[in-house]
Length: 105
Picture 1 (cartoon, helix red, strand yellow):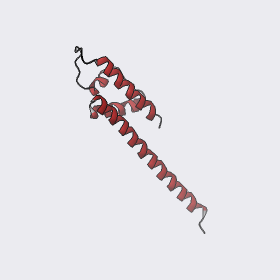
Picture 2: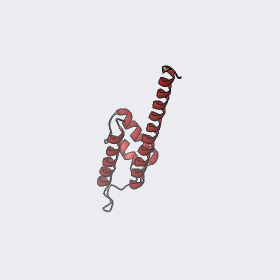
Picture 3: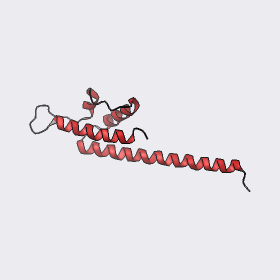
Picture 4: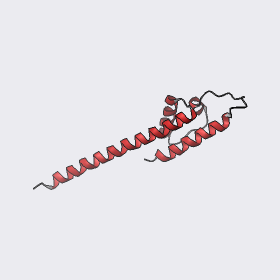
């Protein structure tokens, strides 16, 4: 017959494994969602992941300044065909959804 210590250690190992699997799942889903936004808006992948990691570290999504502009694709500010402001706002809205979904996990 097993003693209490055996069962406690076994339960702890199972819980640790469950937490690790959950964290891996969350990381995979986060990466999928962010990669979808990157592809949809043709964003700079490395800069976008860096921007989001910094945002999680700071506890907020900083949408002002040059960091957000570094992730955007090259767009003319004066072209009538490309609405830079609309694209930028769409990107920000998508990143905010991802940030809000994964910030407290």
